[in-house]
Image (cartoon, rainbow, N blue to C red; front, side):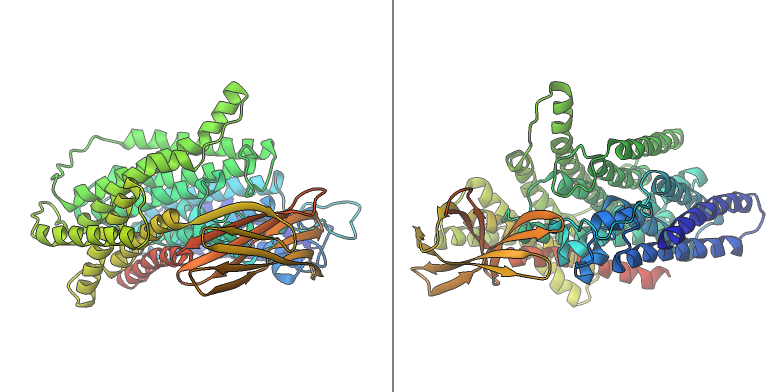
Length: 628
């Protein structure tokens, strides 16, 4: 029953998408200034039906309708309700249906909230967006149908992957998809802009909020995934340069560059074609990330599928998108002499873009290089943190200084009136950096530069924050994001330099001593929970030079549906540091492998990212009041 409803709604949405394109072309040839009400009604029906379609799949998971193969493979009647619901998008088919929902909703809202822009521009945006919607709908219906039936109907499901049974991962995909798929609307708008020659300030205003909302959600989505990996996978850090993590970071770099370029386009009507390139690049990178994950060519705990045929469809779809958009771009592109003054805000924003593209290319190279190496040489290679740290960290130091100075420059032609202030900020940053060395311990020269440049950005942003609060025409949302980014780099630097990691083997009753720490393996017990059984260790942590007496309880969880063992970290967090322990059993032995970590300022890393995203949301609401 639910399967029939879902398939009917998918088919109906295909017909509505075709109808929208047909009536849109009819409307283009019409002399009417306004878009026909029929198109608005069709877009409303399209959004409504695809949401109902998704809720139908959610209902199938809630009632455990195992006649649907997606439910059978990704749920179990005994699963908690939260994980039944999150199982809807915790798989390939359901997550792609969520993609289509976001594509459709963004299409409808773009049409609804851009009333002050030309009809032809909006119509072409709608046509391109619906071509994307139809592409994914055909893929869903004929290759990755979430409502496919299984016969005979199983009495019980196989269960959701245990590492996906987590609150953070329940919200991670929807947040990330708003960022990923939200970029489709300014991809469509960019192509419409090229077709209709609609450019300049008004074009920038038409897409600015859509870039902001997708960038803000993408930031939160990356954060949720990072927090999940921290406490669920037992890796013990905030970022691991995992290939699928990188796939989510690539479009974020392009979005960040686009956000800053739009400022120039809106203020000075410059960099139009560069903005178009970034609009196209952002969504292309989003679909590229989808291809890498869905095709199974990346080896990662995050991948949903290992089906080359699915990857081939997305690869063909991606190639057609790239070919068509590049062909149209070069057909419209004309060389433009912008005459940028080297000492102006425009130039500093362009430099920001160069940094973002450098980071993007570095991460892209590190992600795809192992794939090509394996194809060409049949040998697997891995590109890990040493590569990224060596290439990116020195550039981050320079980037932070430009990030501090850029907002203080003037449009067109700048004159530095505040060099004295910047010099004072630099001196204070250096002094605090050496104070940190003196109080704690020495660390590498590059770490010194990272700490100094992060402090430089923080103090420069705090001065801007003070001016903003005094209503001196300083952009408050920008200050919040820049200030938070400075704190993020500072806390990452401190975390990297002052972390402690120890790996050792213990059995119950034994104690491990190192530095000023003592870790005692006091007890081991087996407990039954609703969804799994757990072997729980009890560890007592003491530190001789502090009044520290912490107990941590790492777990080895045994799931039956599906049959899986996971290793759960036990973490004690406070504002200054985290204590982190995982344990894993050693076969045919009474010993357990213990991984202990002390991670300074982890909580502040998460808080910093939240405030980076908050700056984007504040700017979004400010623009919404201004333009709509």
